[in-house]
Length: 479
Ligand SMILES: *Cc1c(COP(=O)(O)O)cnc(C)c1O
Image 1 (cartoon, rainbow, N blue to C red):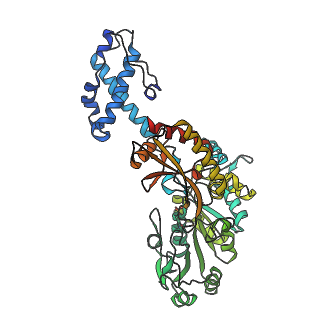
Image 2: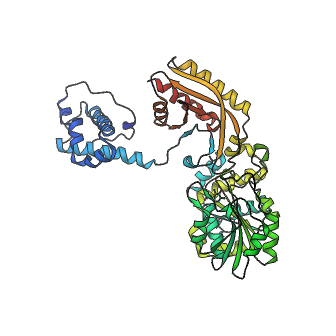
Image 3: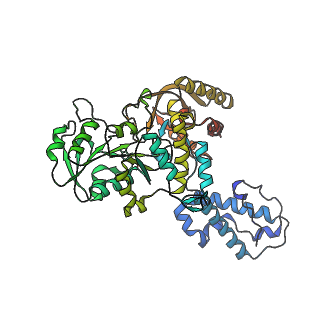
């Protein structure tokens, strides 16, 4: 059959100009669109996009067959063309997770993969992608412990007795509630029965674990005495949930974690805190004083604490569990742990990221670097970018610098205001929706937001290396 050039579909070949009789054997775009082999694509992908692909395929075949001998029958050539169309769509679907430029200013954007990994973490993932020492001790030549290095770093960073890593924070909550309280009751404040973005609902996870949920207090006020009154012979656990992206303000009250711990311990019970994002170091100077500092939760007496790997920690999706060794051992031995354990790629990224936390090298962790970028830095980057854009576009493209706010996202710091400089874009011949859509359809999709009839771009979440691609996408608006 025909020689294949894998890159052909990416560049539009020159149309053939000769009257080579061989070329007449190549199916026309019309024939190709009517072919039975593409009937399904016609309905699933739509005629217009399919026409574009069909045009490319026929042009490509014409190009390849110029001046060659007759390569096959008409039927064979039609089959070949159909096959090429399918190959095109297969390649496209293979890359289901595409890189995007996040110009939304939302740092931990759940739809865009939350925390971006550091270069070191990316390299570690790359290394672990092949065979690796996941459960192997290369020095001794013996079986090793999965996640051992990461657990050690978590212990060091939080002062916990032991640590364990599972697939995400929801999995951590499910495992902890199952192991510690499936056979009895768990007490929780009504003000903490929250739903976090991405379908995590505290009451649902509790019911999945088998524990009986005992709600105490009211939505805005729960006192220590409310917990005390609810305790009985069936009580196994006291749960504290960080409300994350939900805030009750005004007339509120809840006991300190240390008071809850003392109450639990007096009765021989355990205290579990689902810290959500949590932080390893105090980030209150960036408005994140509400996020539990994991080390402090343990010091206050929590017996076990869970938090997410891809929120303010800045690594991959993971549920990090720290606490007393007796509890961690029970979690590790339970059969549910096997179903919830974390994979090698996440462990690789977590290890490197935790190591950066340990060295205090926060500038190496993109989520924190993006969060702590100064207003002046962002303003000056955006101004420079604006000037480049101005030089490369016509007056139809109207760009302005306006002040605005970035957001932490991922259910963390809902009240945090991060001042930023936005690039506001309008175009003489395009609506804001059209601009937004064109940017999304760029070779590397640019994700932006719309407000007041203009498209807003926040460079806070755009890496400096991505600026040329963003510039290209904006220049292409005019074509
Ligand atoms: C985000 C969050 C979760 C869920 O964490 P995932 O890692 O996304 O599963 C659970 N609890 C709280 C309090 C959270 O903020």
